[in-house]
Amino acid sequence: MEQTQNNIGLDYNTEREKLDMPEYGRNVLKMVELMKSIPDREKRTQQARAIIKVMELLNPQVRTLDNFDHKLWDHLYMIAGYDLDVDSPYPAPEEAEMKTRPVPIPMKGEKIKATHYGRNIEKIIGLLCAEPESEVKTEMIRALAIYMRQQYLIWNKDSVSDETIFKDIEKLSDHKLKVPEGLKLNQISQDTQFNRPGLNINVGQGGGKNRNYRKNNKGKRK
Image (cartoon, rainbow, N blue to C red):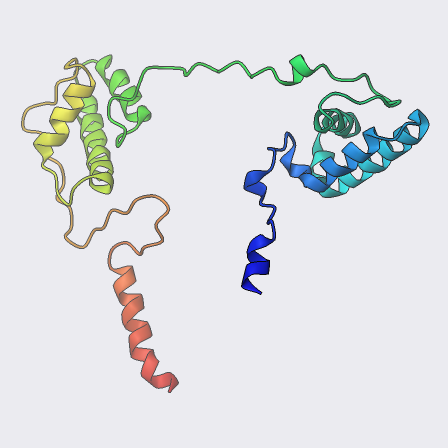
């Protein structure tokens, strides 16, 4: 029995020829190959229309496209290797045009200097550089520094000094923006937690209260 099984050739997808349109599967490819072998053109066309209906069922999202029927016929030609002699309601697509790679879109703007702060922080710093010295500008720098400290704590360490944030502001501004001497930031509560976006974690004291509530009521349910 073991020897018989070893002699059986298993047909793995990894050993087969790569599909040009994998969303339709290998069975559609076999249908197309059988359709191409039909000698009568009219019967080939009838079979092609039947295959189009099968393709629509297998790939229903194609209906969301404009002129989806035209798209299906283009896909049929692609599956057939552009070698298809049938009465199509649409012009046969050119292989060179269908295989043309899209032109890459160049990235706009300069590279972000500090990804943990983000591009918007750099834009705000640029605007502050143009502001005249005043108490309002000082308060704007303070608010910016507090926000940057929060972003820093999310992505980096458990603590950070005010001086580190101030140095980052001046560095990101190419030293065009000077943090006023004696500027102080408010203290961070020891219970404050800064979590990365997407993590479903309770912040502050709320999570602890909820956990205690569940723990205290666990015995009552019994």
